[in-house]
Image 1: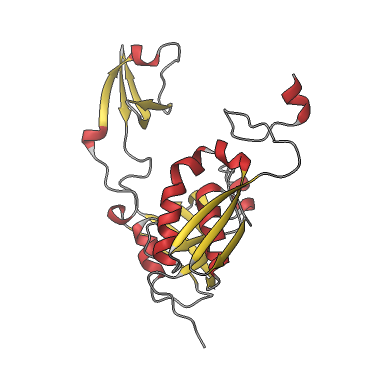
Image 2: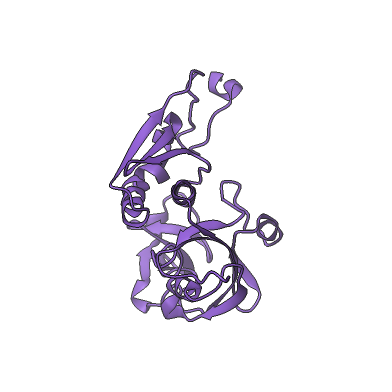
Length: 243
């Protein structure tokens, strides 16, 4: 019997996103990422667990999941309004070159202006034009994807959400008597992704897993605490921490 995907379902999906026909900008395949120079050694590969309709992907891809069978493989062309938005000329700003301080401004430089990320598109004298639109704004993108699995197990659903938001996989989780208890490693308290998303994760568990409360329990192993590099959020090894 075919399992048809509906809004609210937890699915595991693998995908590759392209624009301008063959330029790859996003993928869950590690080898494809390396081949196309978009590999992130802190990224997560092998497929994402998402809730259909919860906004975990761009709108056009999220909508395309609905009605597909588990195991489906195919592609979808997504217009700008359901991808990364239309290009907004109002988000192209002209700023003084003094904003860059000791950095040299040049076309293609990624910058942050007033808390917004953008790209330098022109340098004219002492003025710099910065485009604060998403780099793919105004473009139609194509996603090739495969729906690998429909997830029914509550523990696996919660682990999938944590993996999606924090990059951590296979956390200890217990679901019983209407309570989801997630045992988080102490080092997670240094993870900015976790600090910013812990409330949202709890909300999504409550709304989609069918429990009445969520408990986060910090787990302290008997081994010494691992020191975290505040810049990379990665554990320091013993030698580097002694320097």
